Length: 140
Image 1 (tube, rainbow, N blue to C red):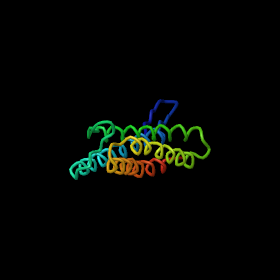
Image 2 (cartoon, helix red, strand yellow; image 1 turned 90 degrees about the horizontal axis):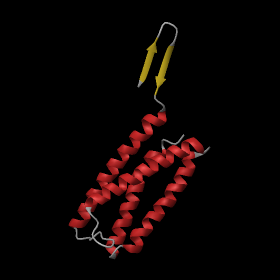
Image 3 (cartoon, rainbow, N blue to C red; image 1 turned 180 degrees about the vertical axis):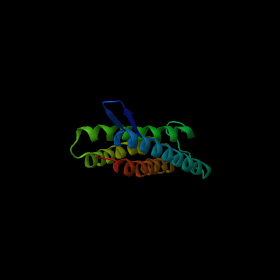
């Protein structure tokens, strides 16, 4: 959106930067979509009899919440890297691969059954596969 202010002496144009317009929208969109997707798959897994439990049953809303929080963290990380790094895309991809591997360790270590471990790790990977490429495209 561009706003033009006219005065007798000066015309000033205020244009939104690509960062303030696109990255927050993409982060919110991919967060919502991946949150809905992981929740829907969690419902299907529970229907199929997979307990999806880590020290107790995980509430279905938790899948969407954690996925959206992950997308927001990724968006903030990318915004910081876009400002500070000469190679933000490469560094973003390296960091997100590492963070995804770390996030997979929790369910792999603490899930109550083997089927829960496999399913929760798969959901972590699915969320990462949905979020990371969308955000990486916005690296400067």
